[in-house]
Image (cartoon, rainbow, N blue to C red; front, side):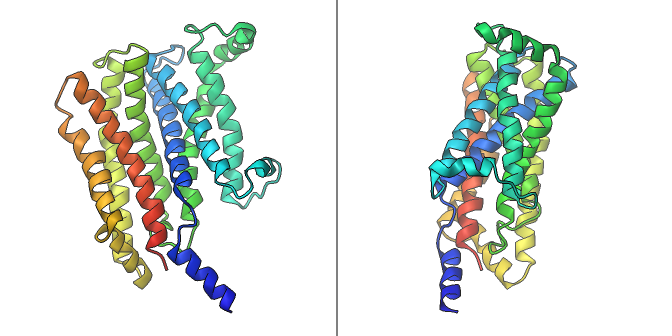
Length: 306
């Protein structure tokens, strides 16, 4: 009985999932969001055969961030050198196992799509024939990667929403919030890299359309946050206690300044400006706000618990 009591207190008062998990959630969200927005843009504009600057930027971001995210995830394991075991042993009823299966498909395929998109920019040597085959079937490849990218965004939400002891985290709407925030930040990051590295015109049709799509995505993100807050305020005593995360303490300050102020208000205030400074500041604000949101959900969710 004493052991059970101590275990409960440890989960309630400590941080079981530290900052590397928050960084992983951030990087996985950026990866899935960037890749998904670029592919949806290509499909919508019927340019699935084109290696647009946006597709190049998104696939590069997608591959680099998911690899870095996996490094954070592995390093956070108790025995990092035994990480290979989760690649062999699966439990179909486990959210983590399902996520690992999705990652095993997503990581190599987004790498292939990146090589396809960058095929004209870099000499791939002996791999060119293989990449050429995937290039000939790129429409199907993009559809598969799109499904997996959205799955990765949602999976990060499902993964932590299964923690039933934490009312702020244990929310059915959390996967939808993580998809929306991933799309928002991924689109912002893709725009900046497309313009900065691949010469995309900041006023091109693709970037204008993507900029217009950011507003309904941000609205969906704000709606999900509002739904979580209402669910906590109108819930039981434990949920109402967890609602204090929005109003008291350091994490409330982080939420209102980082998530609301930087993540939402700064892009809105800069939306009318047409210069490069505003373009990059707005993108950085969206990415920063998404990171602040992940930190708030993970840390405040664990601290304001049952």
